[in-house]
Image (tube, one colour):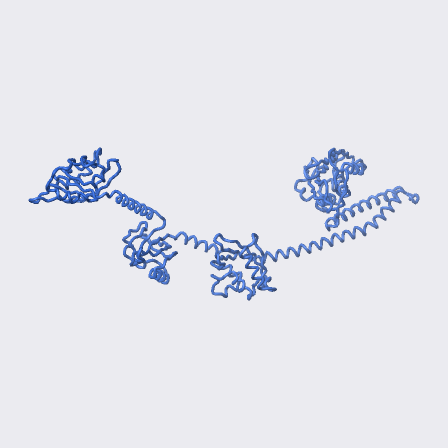
Length: 622
């Protein structure tokens, strides 16, 4: 129950129904003598818990309660007015901030025994204020450390806030954009001022400024007008970015593009030219007669080309159809570059690609010299082919012409050496006749080899597929070579794999390969040596190998073997006849089957020639 204080009773009646917490304290000791119901509701304290106590009762159990209340209590004791934000806690422990206004209650003589306290709960308002201050501080921190800087103009288009690192706001405050002395063309500055005057948003306004150390930096700015809820213009807000590094990179890129030996052109998503280098203009001289090709569509360039001396030769028959084809190919460029022949004789290689933003970038390369060299090479190749065919035809004809007299020589000499028509007298004559027969037979074999090789080189040697057992063919060939090997005191050793399946190949060609390899091996083996013939199935076919124990072949000569008329110069081949065609014919016959030939040799250890063949050839190859 509140104590009876007649002098304040009118006030208690007046403020009893106030919605704001209201209390009266005694000035001498700041003890509470009266509180209204709103005070009790706000603090959670009953009237009995407050009357007679000082204001620290609003923060029970707090050792700093009296200190928090000290400014207000001092004002109350001194009987002077004051306004204070006093932090408190409700009985439930929740924070409470009270905005208290102290008003001394004067009595007779001017003294003030009591002080009226009118309070408002400003807890939420103060929290909101702190949050706003924190957000502003946070934004200010971000603005100060951001690579971009932010700015604001008032309704008079003068700066009232900027966040330029290292530059005080005073350097801009109250100034218009022009008064900050931006470095830019007058026409661009006037256009920007027109945007501001008509309240238009803007972006990518590029200008330069001098920094305090005298360095010139380039900036790009954008902004938008700000209007209040009534539609009244309040100014502009925007940001700016230092683009010095970007412009320098762009300058270097443009310099690199300009130094290219190829022409470069860039189209935007609307298929209009936005960038090109000088080389592109050089490749198409008609573009030099235009004020500029920037902004022209690709189709516009094509139509300009139609009236020039450097148009596409394909455009001659139907220009409109050609334009449609070229535009379609330009908008959907192929993965590989393509060639274009111009009417002035030049060739251009066109390479185009779509860009990420929907445009097209193109590279144009002058390949005229390369195309001429290519055409010259094709012409030379065709001429060489014609000469080669003529040579092969000549060799074939000559071989045919030589065979007839050689057969006669061999036949007559054989008749004479066997004295079929009667004795010829001297034994020496009979020996001479045998020598003539052998020489004729050697020449006939040589001519046969030449004829076979010429047919292969001319593409006239056709394969005839036949299924046979390779082991039987190998036995047949070894038997044919037995007498030759015996005369040379050479023995054969065969190692045909027993599981080798039947093969479907050109039997006559395989027989010739075996005869050539075995003949060479016998020829270049030392007396008493052994020639090994092996054959075994391997992935993709089977391999025939003939190895001798002869003198071997120098490593630097291996690569030249199996070429027509090539022999290794050594003591052995100087005393033995041979044309050097055997290996060349064997290699060619193996390749006709889809196989290959390999030579392995070591000086003093002999030579091994391997032929890899498929087990069968396709019927189409026959």
